[in-house]
Image 1 (cartoon, rainbow, N blue to C red):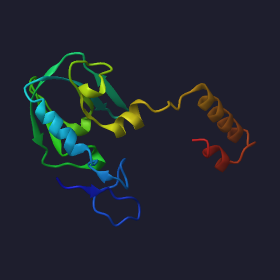
Image 2 (cartoon, helix red, strand yellow):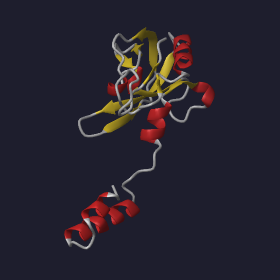
Image 3 (tube, rainbow, N blue to C red):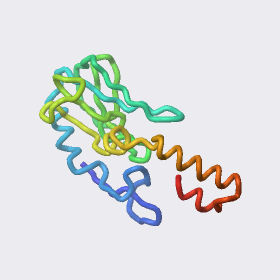
Length: 164
């Protein structure tokens, strides 16, 4: 498997910039996880899928098991677009890129034990699913005060942008 370092601004490393900038892509444990997936071929699995839309990124937990038919090489992986080097072929006729999956588990669709988890996109889980939400009461109050202060010319514009 070919690993590359994802390029950061002003960096000469190969690979596009994206959410994993400056990190190895795919992650060092990716190959181990793909082998675990391959060992589950012809067995039922449960998916947590990432569903990108034009305005947000949704998460779809399935309580229906899918039979994993194969783990295929994906011909055009791209970290900037979230496309991983492999895809899963499922018994419902879909091929789902691993870049669109947050977790694959066996035996339990919700809250699986570590032994039941075959694949996990730690980056997606940590940065998207389990991150503290910005729309807390404190964030909304601070942002509202900053915008009101800017509107009333009580706070310089540069100071109000710092609260974003």
